[in-house]
Amino acid sequence: MTTMTTGPTSRADANRRRILDVALAELLRDPDASMDQIARAAGVVRRTVYGHFPTREVLVSTLLDGAVEAVAAAMDTGHEGVADAAEAVARSTLAVWEIADRYRILVALAQHSVTVQGIRDRLAPVRATCAEILRTGLADGTFTSPLPPLALAYVHEQMLFALMAAVNDGLLAPPEAGPSAAITLLTAAGVPATRAAELVAKVTTGA
Image 1 (cartoon, rainbow, N blue to C red):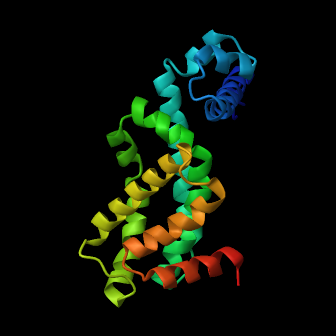
Image 2: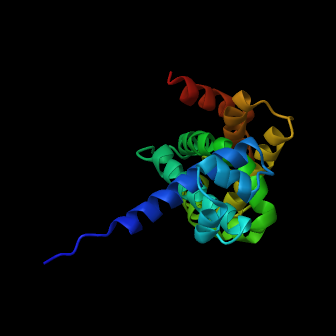
C-alpha cells in the first residue's frame, strides 16, 4: 500500500518556491535587498528563509540556476526547426534575450557572489548548443570567422554579458537591446551588417 506524502513536506516546498519567487522580484527591484527584506516580503520569519538558504550567496546561486534553466529552454525553443544557421542565431538570441533581460540584474549580482567561473560552468550546455549552430554555419559558409565554433560561442556569450551590463548602466535602451544583441552576434560571426539587420527585422516583425 502506497503512503501519501505528508503535509509538512509540501508546505516546506511551497515556502521554498515562494521565497525564491519573492527573492527574485525583490532583488530585481533592489539589488541590495537583505535576507530580512526578502523574509518580510515573503511573509515568513527570517529563520524560515535561512532554513532553506543558509546565506544570501546560496539564495542568489539558486536563483541563477533557475535563470540558466530558463535560458537553455529559450535557446532550444528559439532555433527549433530552423535550418538556416543565421536565422537560428537570430531567433535563439532574441529568445534568450527575453529571459536575459529579466535576469540581467541577477547576473550582475551573481558575478560577485557566485563567481564568473561558476556562471561559465552553468552555461556550458547552452554554449555547446550555440557552438553546434555556429559549426553548421561555418561549414556551409553562412558564417566566417577565424575562431573555432566553441571559441566563437564563448565570444557570443561574453558579448551578451557586456550588452546586459550596457543596459544596466543606461548605455543601451531596453527596447533596442534584443534586436541589437542579435545583430551584434550575427556580425561577430561574419554576417554582413546589412544582411544581419534585415534578418533580425524579418524575425522580429514576422514578415
